[in-house]
Image 1 (spheres, rainbow, N blue to C red):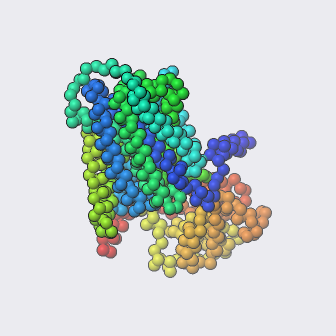
Image 2: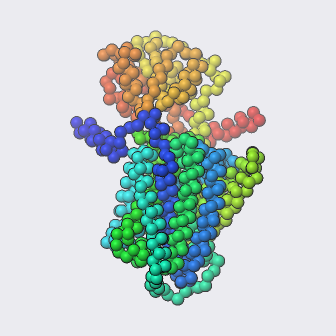
Image 3: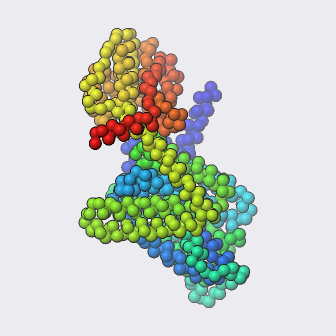
Length: 635
């Protein structure tokens, strides 16, 4: 009794936290417009206003003292110029690649497989660090205002990641409304800070001079490059809109381009405004508090608006991570559909969100937060380089696309993307050099390892697909011999391949009452299975059931107990499951392992016998070599 009760309680808790399952037909209603798409996909870029300028001052003030504030303004305008280039470049990406995937798809299609894998890995690392940096920075802001919370900052950060995970598991539409309002509240608060700050100066207010030590050095190119590298974190999140175009309502490209434009205008106003006002108020971020909190204290005192700025900054920094929750699951789903990531990451959950991608992002981000003790400066050393590598590969891919296609106005388009690629590649070098000791070397070393692993995953999937594929020439030679046994067999099939055909042939030898059963999630996949099955020329009937909730067991049990199957009490039914057996232990994690789940559920029913028909696959390495040799001979 304890087992069913525990299962029931877990199911109830899941429903309360995540909500009821949604049908496939509800996917259209989960799309975003401009109103909610802007805060969800721009929260990362908007939130960087809270720490990008601060990180530049942390680099400059100890070195050059009061001169740091003027230099920060100069660097801020350079970053805004780079933002404009990226905005123009990614508008073209949105038009050309409306199905999402961003840098991964662009680089793979136009530069080749390896650049595509590098772009995908770099972008994935960027999204993971977005969560870790945004949440850690948000906790830093609130603990600077409420010092008694400082010892618990790691615990707070982990708890906030878990809350973000639950919010996003509820689906795109609900998470957009849940996380959208605070983004607008932050924008309004910072605009008020900038306006009131300048009005107060105009009225004669003289800010106190900071107590700074004598400059330790003169302004050097290396120092400016280090500060610029820290400030470039303001540009992270710009690519998220191009990655998430499928999440917009139709016309998705129009909405996505409008959101990208509004995002850049907001960053221009907020980032430029805070960079100018800090020139006059000259706050010193550090142990005494974060830059925006210190500015709010001088401009508003300790009244309502001070706490409003503190609270809204904290919330937007936490929600800045939500951009990653919109981008990472979609990116990794696109990579999984292309066989460059485990296929489980391409599957939608109960609320039509990419559940496995959301959970994976949360777990890895929590490990980083714990490992770096939620220290923003330490995490920023790893942060921007991955994003800018993806920027460079994306723009280079678009440049090659225009040169190859030579469509209308291709020279102008190629110039925009080519200039974007040149500028972002220079920034990659700057960040790698300036932030090498602070941790950028970790990403530089990690990316080749990730690319190697992605390549191994892809090679395995290619090997499995080729071994299971039934060539057109093979259909005519397939025979189904019958032997008469008093038995009833159902063969669940996901698709027509060598494993499922082997199971059907075996079932036909031991029983004359065989039914092939397929659960399809939509009409298109059902039609594809039907067309392939008809080529077999067998008299074994195929039953296809649509499952709008993406269930497998329930439709099968309903079919067994329905009048359609003519099941009578006391009948014994054999469910014959086909399974291909992989060669290496880690290959098992790259497949759904649906067979084990179905077997576990069906074995609870006394009148159902479960049998497994295995198909042993060959080793990937030797098979891929033979595949290459075969292709060379064909060429």
